Amino acid sequence: MNTHLTVHSLHALGYCERLFFLEEVEDLKVADERVYAGRTLHVEIERDEDADETLTLKLESENYGLVGKVDCIRRRDGQIIPYEHKRGRAARTVGGKPDVWASDRLQIIAYCLLVEEHSGREILEGRVCYHADNAMVRVPVDEQARADFQIALNRARQLQASIERPKVTSNERLCVKCSLAPVCLPEEARLAETLIQTETPVAISQSPTFAAEKTTPLEHQPLRLFPADDDRQILHVLTNGAKVGRKGDRLEIWSPETEEKEAYPVQEIGQVVIHGFAQITTQALRLCSERNLGVHWVSCGGRYMGAWSSGQGSVQRRIRQYQALTNPDFCLSLAKRLAEAKVRGQLSFLLRASRESGREIEDVKTSISNIRKLLSPLSRASSTDSLRGYEGSIGAAYFKALPHLIKPEIGARLRPEGRNRRPPRDRCNALLSYGYALLLKDMTNAILVVGLDPCLGFYHTPRSQAHPLALDLMELFRVTLVDLPIVASINRRQWDEDEDFTTAGKQVWLSDKGRKKFIGIYERRKADHWKHPVIGYSLSYSRLIELEVRLLEKEWTDKYTSVETSSEPRGLFARMRMR
Image (tube, rainbow, N blue to C red; front, side, top):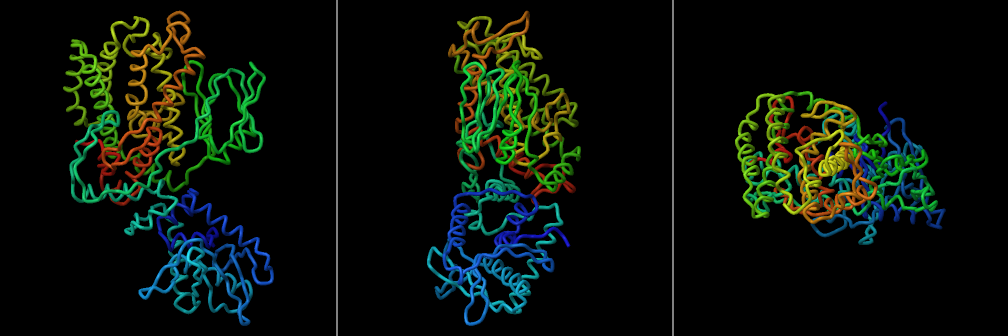
């Protein structure tokens, strides 16, 4: 017998096969307000004082391979009748009479058969009570019901043994009330399929930095199902020697400088970032594991050291990722889209910044011209190595122009000398390195949240402790979240050349004060909103990072593209950046 299924999973199967697969096979659970309201209703039922009439009973069947907790069992006219309570409204027949929803019917039939096996008595019917309209629907347990149950159970076992996600349901109304819509992204999948079927060109900028607001009209306009924002805060622990501990459901920070403790409710925290030589206790790590919070370490010098997570991510998702990203042609196609997106973002930034400055700078014009000349051969690159060569030449031209985007009246010490790192040799490069470290941290966190393996990418090769997939995806956001705000902050004179930086010979780092200031600038930038050029709704950049990871996964997950038969990525991750 396979691993026992829950009766609730059969309810999900009756609602949507894809929902069943995400919850039962990939072990993805997202509770929204409707889920919490349902839990509250069941708690109230369990507290019913009429113990002779109502019994909540947990049942397990080796025969069916099912476990479940039936809401109520009542005796009526000598018959045992299982009840299931729902907070919503009943379905309606053509004549307007209350009827049972298909998923609820499957669930109550399963409970009836479990009770029948447990009691040794034949169960003739079950009942579903809908509290929103005070309706009760009888569900007969006849031969048809038993046959439907067995068909559903067999289908559940088939999906349980598969690594392929079922397609997005054709019934869009089901997605509106589904708690897993932000993971499934059904509307984005339908939009991508529409683009493929119609071969509609999308004329937009290649980067979220300066993307056009208008796109080619599409037959399918997606609903907004992806959550707009995450109002939880990222907890940065900057004080050397500080300790993060646990007190109940709160994370408590003790600082050796003040010997005071600050407590933060864990439900208000999205990540924990340990900077420098701060510490975190085992108890605090366990609390972060329980709440699926990523914990990250960044050195004082601005180097991303690594992450700790609870290991979220099913085997099925990893297998699909490995199958896709071990296909060289598929990886090259993704890498070309990625490189073009990054380069167009750099080009847009140079064009916009030079226009806003009102100055004709020969070095900037030369860099823009060189980048434009290399764009075409970059898009035709026949191998990853040649693609890296073109991108490297473009990067050199970009960083050669970057110092000229800083106003002439700004001191020379804040002007970069090209791109240098490990360690940086000027103040601007110290800012860039620290910003890229924070961006790599956020990219790694998003990959872990989605459940992918950050160690297997499609463009970068493994090096040091930086994960290739995180290095790949952060290319989309370097200009937007790091380069642009750094140049803007320098031009606004936000940096103190002495107090915000620490120097040792030719090496330059941010001081404690500088790091705190930069984190504020970076987090505010992530909170800015941007309208997605294809999907059409606005997201904070923080949310956009997660969305891009989920769209990438769709390149090899959904059935509108097949890694085995096609090397060309055709989902939104690729399409949104094509001219």
